[in-house]
Image 1 (cartoon, rainbow, N blue to C red):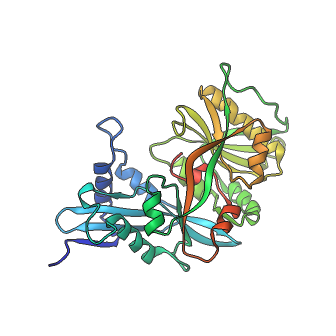
Image 2 (cartoon, rainbow, N blue to C red):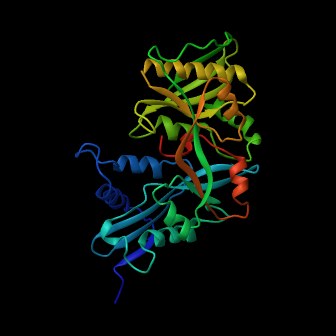
Image 3 (cartoon, rainbow, N blue to C red):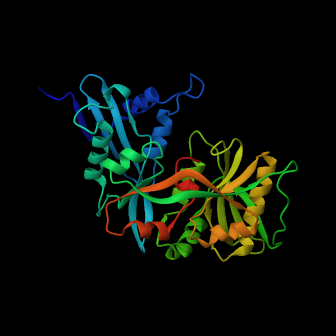
Length: 338
């Protein structure tokens, strides 16, 4: 008897079935508006500047798409070279098919197929997958080679009844909001990239796609420039959402030399005043614990808040967990949670 479910790579035309299966499984915002729209899907997977689609689907002969293992490819700087990594996002199997087929179930078979097609070294392959799969951690560890890399500890300042206090800033620097980032952000990234053993490529193409063009969420993009010649010293991205706590402001992305204290202070001050304008209950951000910015922000009055979230990795290389724990520069914007 022919199996009615085939596990295969994404084909053009699958997108509506993928979105429909996601919205079938996950609740809607108010009973009417789906969590995922086709426009959101197209932005996330088709407009992605990595230029790759790494999705496997479970296609039923009569019912169409009944499961999907989408991986969002991102360009990375890895030990001085360009490569790809992938973040599994919006994973779904409709309930009646979760135990379909051979053990351990359809979710794992979709993941393994994705690994076989898109994991490894070489053109168009991901060196590793990464994510924050707290609910799926056990099954991922047992069957999909997930490794726990690092706890996610946030830095935060709570606002009092009068908000966050105004911070003294260098007079020669100015911070302003922009609609999009331009070519000088590319130059800033090129200047800082050699200092990262591992980081997502934070050029204008990525930052504009991730934040300026984002669907279903609004971000504020800031630049810090010198007052005289307008030279770019750093950039940061800000939003307000209910992650961790209701009405919390976040610095979700950050690109600035760790030893440029003046630019750092100027951008932190701008974010604090924006948080006051938004009447946010706190301002939070995140850096790896071994990154100098993690201590630097504590000197600015930020405290450390441990969460139940942690980064996991499915490696397709030889580097080992310690390399990723010690060398990966990341912010909370590297995830799709904030």
